[in-house]
Image (cartoon, rainbow, N blue to C red; front, side, top):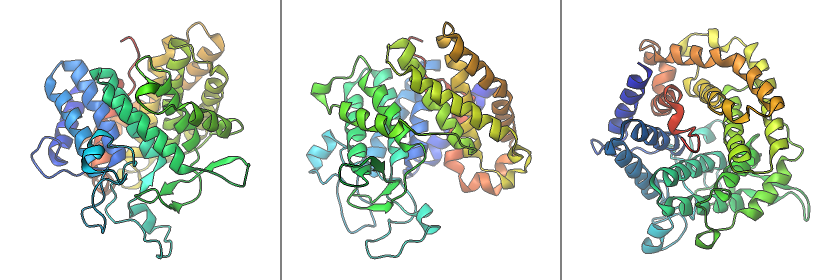
Length: 380
């Protein structure tokens, strides 16, 4: 039943957002990153080329829409500034727009914290999600272009969002940048941005198919991001944030145990902070509220992260310390079931909060119900 609902949700998404060609494309980077992985999961599960075709088409649309300036903006062409021909070869070199409804805040416009949520620009944590989606495309298709585009995007994002707080001082990160990456729109640092960047760069750099002579070397970025993560603490009560921690831990565990990456200490810190976060969340009353007072995509981020722990449990079997932590994390597995059951009910998907965020809710529910496309275990 969950597989059927996941397929139905993704078919609806393909039709309503233009992936299938039945309507004009409507692209949003975070949502589309999960959607690419979902289509790859369906392709792997069914063997149907339809889903691989959807994944390829979605990547192409994202690059040609979000990799270029807005149609209603004053500037045209690739946001990287490359020529049309070069932009086709390197569509991610200038980053990718978020895909928000409103244009970005102008250089002389006063900041409005509430309005900024609806304005375009670039988010670092959206870019890392797209890097992962391109990485998964490379894994499934064997096409090295996807890995090159992923690496170019990772390098661009790190360079644009990272700065020295003082000459020779520690590096910091900007949370939101302008479309052309020329100026910060929100200068504060995202809680998990350095961690997301580190895991994403490690995932690419340590893949056996990654070739530095065909793209940027991510080693300098990994060093700087590692330094930013050295004293960081990541515990949070936000369900989407907790899901992100669990997702990072699942991907790092594969690198540690399947690739021999020496990041055991970081993995343990991640899991411990995720455990603390889940304990804090379990005390909240969020999941007892009505649909009108809940945000599905934030909760579904948590359930997706919990599924990641389920899938890597066998990897850490011989490491009794890490296995014990994951077993404690999996005591909260019922949270994922509770979230999925709630949002799988058609009546709850009629709420305003569901419809206001229809695309992202649809795709993330599909991911949670069938997570193998997003959390793909190597060798499976």
